[in-house]
Image (cartoon, rainbow, N blue to C red; front, side):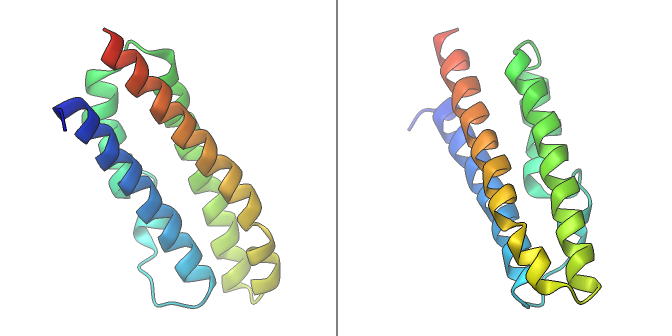
Length: 119
């Protein structure tokens, strides 16, 4: 596997881990909240800031990715707050929107990867 492909596979995994942490927390697992509540502290946010924006800043999709990543965290914070307020069912009902944002992230990652590979 070439370095660029590996880099994007790593980013996708980091994103999946974030999404899994949100779901785990909402379903009652003892999950650390800092990576959920702070978009710069999650491993995918760190990838965006240390790798994505450094290497692919010239691609508009990279900036869109950063924005969608902030949006998914805002939504996750909303869901966490619902759970903390004993509105677990409402929080779980917000998971489909989390999935929509997650799909947008994957699509943007694939677009960035395709464009970076073509350069």
